[in-house]
Length: 273
Image 1 (cartoon, rainbow, N blue to C red):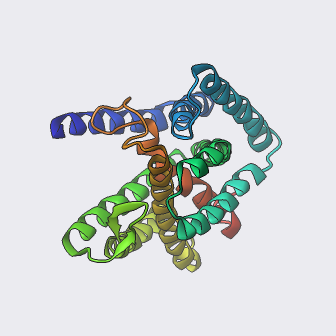
Image 2 (cartoon, rainbow, N blue to C red):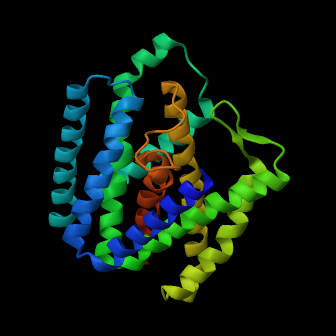
């Protein structure tokens, strides 16, 4: 299993780097939309849409929504679809704080709410990643590495020092000590990014703080998918990636991180519209 996981990870990493650095933005947008729709297919199962035709209709609806979002963001240059994603993740933080495992009846009532949540989770993140790629492709890789760094630091710190559970009713393996380890790792990573992207010295503190906030939101993305899987009684979102589960298991952190990072950079004027 470990060998399979490593091989899949290496192939995924190579594919991501190649797509980011070699594809023109229009092709990158299409490829990322395809990945997003694969994630939507997995999400439809998790939220209880069992019939194949219903799941296909859900994925088709998100494809149409993706097209509308592309027109709004990249043709009309309206970023409110991405801003809606940021507002959505602020609401998710509240839901995570208040979450209590529900009964089967309550889960049934949540089916269509979770379907809507899938659209709010996936489409703004897709638009944000395409925007990054259009402006500076290396920002995509930086964001991917940022979330990976936070996740890796949280895992090893939690494994070595973890005592207090972060969200035991959602993901028992995560600890507050692991979260602190993630923050500690992101600070130098943020400083490196500020230097590498030529951020004005007066904005370095803001950039590092935004990196920390983005990393924290990536944890929220991970927790939210864990919540959805818990409600569905599933261990993984799918089986498409050997040793890694499904697409959503790999992009859950990015879905929360991408909109927050983009809006934060634009708000500070670090990245032009």
